[in-house]
Image 1 (cartoon, rainbow, N blue to C red):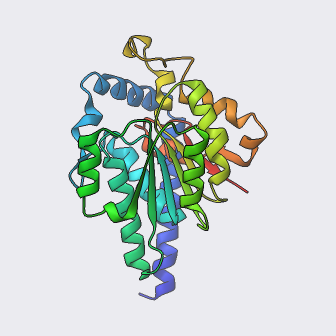
Image 2 (cartoon, helix red, strand yellow; image 1 turned 30 degrees about the horizontal axis):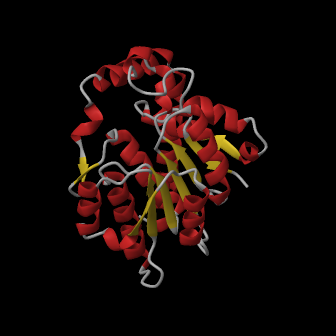
Length: 259
C-alpha cells in the first residue's frame, strides 16, 4: 500500500476518534457516571496506587496518558511543574522528554524538567536525586509564587523555545490564580498550562475536612477567573481532551495557549 494511502487511512481514523470523543462529551449520563466513579474511587485513594519508573506518581492513569500526548504534540524544551510530592510526575516528564530527544537524535541541550515545591522532604529528594533520570531535573524549594522562586524558574527556562507548565501545588483559588498569573506568560504559543485537581469543584464538600480548599475555592474556580482576565484571553480550554478522557482530575484544566 502506498504511503499516501496509509496517511489517508490514518486521517480517517483520527477523524473518527474526534467524533467519538465529541459523542462522549455530549453524553450527560456517561459524564455523570464517570464523575461518580472518580468520586467513589477517591474514597479508596485510587490515585495513590501507581508508580512511574519506581516513584509514586499520585495521578489517574488517564491523566498520565494525556500528559504523554501533550508532550509528544508540543515537544517542549522544558516542563515547569509546581508540586513535587514523591517525584513520580517529575520522573514521568523527564522520561517523556528523554524519549523525545532519543527519537530526534538530540544530544546538545537535552530537554529538562523544573520542579518546584514549598517543601521537598529529605527522603523524597534523596530518591529523586538517586534516580537515573535526575540529570534532566532541577529541583527548586520554596513557594511557587515567591518572587525569588519565580526568578530561579525563569533563569532555568531562559532560551527555551517551547515551554509547558503544570500546576499541581496548593489548590486554593487564591494560590492557583496567582500561579496562573505568574506562570502563564512562560507558556509558549501552541503549548499548554495544565491545572490539576480542578475536579475539587465537582466533589462533595466532606472530602476536604482538613484542607483550605473545597467546592467554591479551588483550581477550577481559579481557572475560570483567570480566563476572564486579560492574561487569560490567549488561552482556551481544550474541551476535546477532557471529552475523550472522561475520567480526569483536571476538567477545564487543560489550557492551550493560542498566541
